[in-house]
Length: 381
Image (cartoon, rainbow, N blue to C red):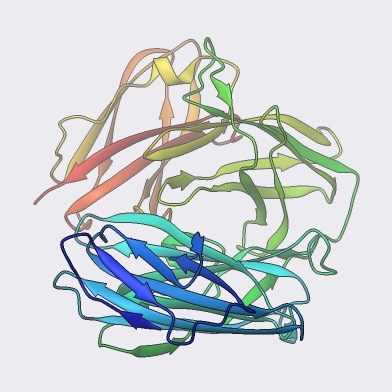
């Protein structure tokens, strides 16, 4: 088909062969826009657009399609990302799954989900044409897959976390980049324990907030080995059953939001922990197990920005031993310091002398890990 280019009434696309015995269907950017010999578009936004004409011969059961790429504005750079999805260390082809494409705008430090597709029968995926830039690729098994229950959704670069995903860069016109993804196998040896809780929006002890459904929750041991994963139900609740006794980390994965994990220990004297509360905001997911209102009993970091030392005030009803961890924006623990804090009003000073300039979190837990409080700060020299 031909393209008129920009005219006073917009763009006109015309079929080169016009046969009344054939059916003509037009799509623009995967959206149906009409049938017939011609299609019209009043205009396009800046970027890369795809116009396709599908011709169907119903009598002879034949089908053909042709597509054209339309580039509007100064963006004359576009490319393609493709690959295959596998499962486990043996790289078995993923039988059923979905692949997600995420744009990483480094200038504005944002992550935006831009597309997704179901794997084809040969476990391949294909995205394009795409504006040049940096992308993340994530794959997950469908519920009908044999790998669904024991393989965690994973990003290209072999990480379950967006903060550690390997970016796929399109840097030149017509670039074609392969970005295979291998789902990480989860290994739950089984046991009598249970770990569960809920995920809420802006939650706290006095205002539970709105439950968040469909949120991915992951369970790891202290060595970072994947144990299991699940999704929250319509009430924002989740649970991991048949878990062996031990100490675990509970993570929530939400695109573009930093997560501070909860650390949970179960054993013969306490085989079940059902009160892991996960508090979600636009910039931070804070996890913990709360009873006393520690959130209100621990001050913000001051001064902020801080230099070589950060100060936190406590107002507690009993003496406790706490661990204060410095967490970077990817959720990685940089350092951990221990303090004994008495009852009443007390002050703790945290050494930041070897910390590079930037934004960080202070995560404060007692040694039994029965609560978790997080404060954000900026380090400047």
